[in-house]
Each structure stands twice: as structure tokens, then as C-alpha cells.
Length: 608
Image (cartoon, rainbow, N blue to C red):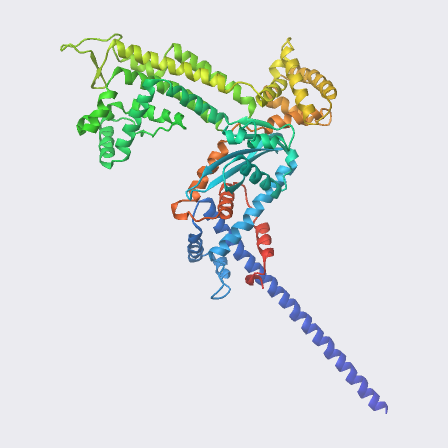
């Protein structure tokens, strides 16, 4: 019996040992399987991230989605082995255009989340609006957002693409509805909207039912501006339209542009003569009324290539060539061309300054005044191009041997007369005078511009170093009325804070004149002192974030036209928005977050 018990104990021990061995084996197999699964998932993730990198490259270089599979294959051919793991089986390779769109959507969501996080940290934001028609004859609303962010220890305005929406009709009600829907979809509260900039069209700024008027009804203290670049172009173009000879001059330039742009033979002839004469190879540009400042490039091209142009027309000897040769071989044409080259150069500099993304209201008036001062000088004197021309021609018309008033200029005979000289001088002087008047009238400080001007004066260090405080007193009155209307505080409380801040700012400017050089320096001071001067900090933030132009929207439309071409005219608005968002994104993208978003959308076979 004892023997049987010993056998039983031995058997039980063996069973226990076998059980432990089995459990250990199963545990090891489970761990191995888990490791294998983790390794497989890691390979799959690496493959997807590599594919997303290619998709991002294609989007940022405006490459069609249909090229992405070939891009994958090219990378594999060159040794990018991670992309080989994209192919699960003969039916699933994640290279189809539907997979590419899913990748784009996930990456675009990462970009949006990053943008919205920065906007929320900003507290306040402004928007820029414009509408345009794409190649499919669809009207689209382009929206850019402007917010504040800390850059190098200073609070700076940042402008980014927010979105694009298709409009059923481009009236104020439709634009307003689409805009509000977009802001709500992104979780951007309207009470944080403090500024808006438009192109000045009646549908945008109409006093009865325009988009801006409708926005004012749902948000207080909204500062609206008419794009400064549009105002500059309109002021210059309208001035030219009122001078009869400049209208004719523009037609001549456009005729010369078409003569060369539409004929390879004529262009080849011009380039050959330019090579012989060693003239500049600057090309003529077409002039549009809405973009009149592009005229500067064409006028300068005429001045630089005048001898070559005349030589081509004489060599051609056709009716069309001779029809252009006649008007450009006159004193009146040459005087006007050289005069405009001087004037338009400074207007073009102003235009480029107004088209900067980081420009704010504090820079608008100084840039305008400096340009007007230069134009006043050109009106009564002459610039570099005109002085050089006048030095090469007779001071008065001279009669030649056959009784005609001509002179030689760059190897060509030019017709001259006292009447031509008088008309040329009068037309140019009239044009500059009209430009100056238009700039002053279109940039008058009315409506919200009065508030922005007062805010600028309040933070201008130059007024704190003057004994006369009348400017600051007047600005304080306007600012206190504005801030109290925004609900920042009662007018008396705001006024008291303004008086206190002015005393503080005056001491700081006197103590550190090398630190507080401009408006932005005092703006930074008020924002840093937010706990002490909360109302002033609000005023500073609103001034900094206020948009003054819609040039970023125009750049957005240019990007839209690069992406949505005749060959890609079927792009839906969602895909177009994603492509624009990725193409305009310049910061490093978190592909890990993009992968997580993509993996969470639905069950992916590659992850099973």
C-alpha cells in the first residue's frame, strides 16, 4: 500500500512538472507571438509613414495623386524597402488614389489641430476674406486667419490658411452663412473675432447687408479694413484712366507685348538683336487695369530695350510693325516712358511693402507718407531715368536740314516738337498729381481706421517724448470709447488705466530710449504688463492682430490655380482644401500623430 502511495505521489509530481512545462511553453509562445505582432505592426507603421511622406512631398510640389504610386515604386527601386510592406496581397497595396486621399485627410487634420491649438492660445484672432472663380467655374470663398504667437520672446502676428469653401451664390447672405459655418466647425468662437479685412466690394462692406455688417451684429468691437494693396492699385489705375495719353500709352505697350508674346519668330528676332546690341533681356508684360502696378516691369523693359525694339519693327517692315514703330519714335513717348519708370518704381516698392504677410496698421501710414513725399519730389523734378534721357536729347526742338524737328537717340531718329514736349510734361505731372490725390483720399482715416490710428498713436514712443500731450489725449478718448463698447470695462475705468499707463510709458521711454524705438516696442510692454494694465493689453492685442490686406488670400488663389488645373478640374472642394493645406504648410509634420488618426478611421488590413 505504501508502494502504491509512492507511485501515486510520483505520478502527481510528473503531472505537475508537465503542467508547469506546458504553461511555460505556452507563455513563451504567447510572448513570441506578441513580439512578432509588435514587429509586424512596426513594419506596417513604418510603411504607412513612408507612404505619407511621399504623399506629403507630392502635395507640397503640386504633383497629381495619380503619380503617387509611381513615386512609391521609384523609391522601392532605389532601395526604400519600407514601402514594400505596403502591399498586403494582390488586392490591397495602399497605393490606390482612395488610400492617398485618406493619407491626405489624416495629415491635414494634424495641421488643422496644430493651427487651432495656436489660435486658442492666442485668445483673439482676425480673418481675411476674398472670393474667386476656379477653372471649373465654381465660386470659392478663401479664408485666412491671423492670430498672435510668441516668437523669440515677442508676441507677433501670424497669418495662416484656414480653409476654402465653395459658394452656391456669391451674395452676402451666402458668404456670411458659409463663413460662420466654417468658424463653428473649427470651434472658433465669434466673440474672439476682433478684425476682418476684405477687398472692399459692396457684397463685403455694404452698409445695409454686407458680410462685415452681418458680422458686426454677432460680435462686438470688430475692426474692418479695406485691403491696402487693393486701394493702392485702384488709386493708381484710376489716376491713369483720367489722363488720355496714358490710356493710349498703355495700349501701345499691350500691342508690343502681343507682337512678341504670340510670335516665336518676332521673339527670336528680338533676342538676336538684343545679343548684338548687348541690351537687357527684360521681357514686356501685359498690363491689366486691376493690376496696373505690373506696368512698372513693362515700362522698364521698354526703357532698357528701346533700341532693340525699334530695330525689330524696322526690320519687320510689316504694317503691324510700322504701326507700332510710329508712336514709340516720338519725344512724347520716350519722355513718358522714362518718367513713368521713375514714378512706378517707387509705387512698386510701396505695393510690395503692402503685400507683406507680417505688415500691420502701424506701418501703413509711414510707408504711404514716405512714398507721397518722393512722388511730390518727382512731380517738380526728375528721377534717374528721366534725367539720363534729358541729358541725351536737345534742350529745345531743333529743325534738321529737311525742315523737320528730329534728333537721334540710341541710333534712331526721333520726332520732336514743342507741342510734344508740353503735352508729355503736362500728362506726366497730371498723372502724379492724381495719384497723390487718390492715395490721400483712399487712405483717409474714417470709421474703424480712426480707432486703429488712435491705437497706433497711443503706443507710439515719439508722442511720449513730447511736451504737448494733445495727441495722446485725443487718442485716449477714442480708445476708451472703443474698449468700453467692447465690454472691456466701463469708460471711466479704462480712462483711469490709460492715464496710469501713459505715465508709466513716459518714464520707460525716457529711461530706455534705445529699447522703445517704435510702436511694436510699446505694444510688447503693454502685453507683458497684462496683469497691471488689462485693458491696454487688450488694445495692444487687437492692434497687432488687425489685418490690413487680403494679399494672402490672393496668394491662396494662386496656389489654388496651380493645384486645380485644366487637367485636374474635377477636384472636389474637400480634396482641394487638403492639398492646399499640405502645400502651404512649412513646419515639420508629426507623422506619428497622422498615422494614429489614419489607423483610427476604420479597420485597416495592413494592421490586422
